[in-house]
Image (cartoon, rainbow, N blue to C red; front, side, top):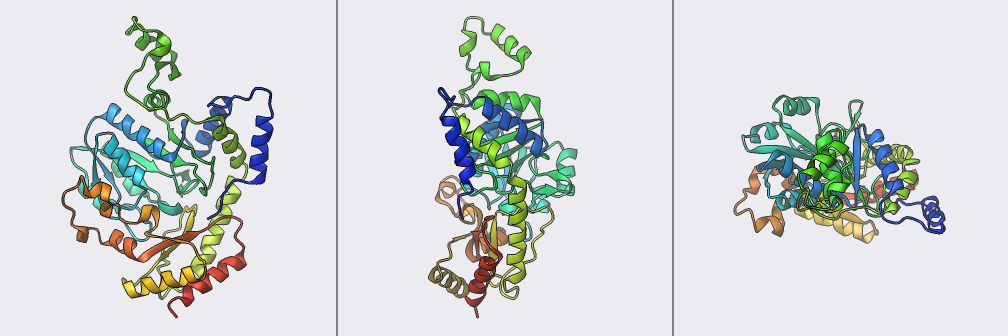
Length: 385
């Protein structure tokens, strides 16, 4: 992967820092970026934070505070912070297996797992693929089950005509390093729920009431705590997850090239799929609405000898890869979960187990030439020939 920040982005930062007294903590540039990001995603609001992981933590904190204790249905293929945020909030993760063609949770297994304790379905859109269906969205809506979307790897991906991140109660984005849009570190939560929005504004800044933008709400809470300085009323035990103005400046600059970035990444992935050996590698992904983040390489044959040959060959040819796709594969195998989940039958998760052992992702970025992609495919194909 390559850094997605251009010289033009950096020059814009330099010009900003040349001001006599530039504001550095979050201020008007962050507010403008939040407004434009929410508009682009298709929600009423966006709240910027200092990382995608912080977005996860704040969303799950809000879920616990606004909707109560219970379970959150999560995939075993995701980044560690999705599941960790559920645990941090005092909620209980319930795992279901994924589908191979979208790498997202199997909706039939989600339906089977919903119970009276279910507080939300926390669905990850993996590596630019859309993990939602109209059927799943309608089922959750009909049964009043909260949907939270992890769109960290899939900026701009679609379900029909709607951008991912606009369909759930909340959606979390990461702006790290090589993502479609990057602010070095950074993240955002999108929502159209006013109550959630006001909670997030306060919770990202220590729980301070003064961060609430609803004047009526702020006045009511202030009057019920009349012995306190209204500027220093802490509504709940929260965090400091504020961004800096750098997030806003870079975010606004990056939005100018985001659509082109997505288009080129998708073209690159389509070229990759058309040229890798489909007799050895899985290529039948559901690409409708995709916004590719990385080249996805999955062995069809669950053969460790073949896997090892592929990895030796890639290393020999200086091709960087990540085994297990997002988050290093099956999170149920990770020590942080094994220490709190006493028994897991991995045989109940055959798809993620295959992904864990027999898959990789390879870097995709707009500067890749078609010739470089053809060369990469030749290297991949020759590993098993």
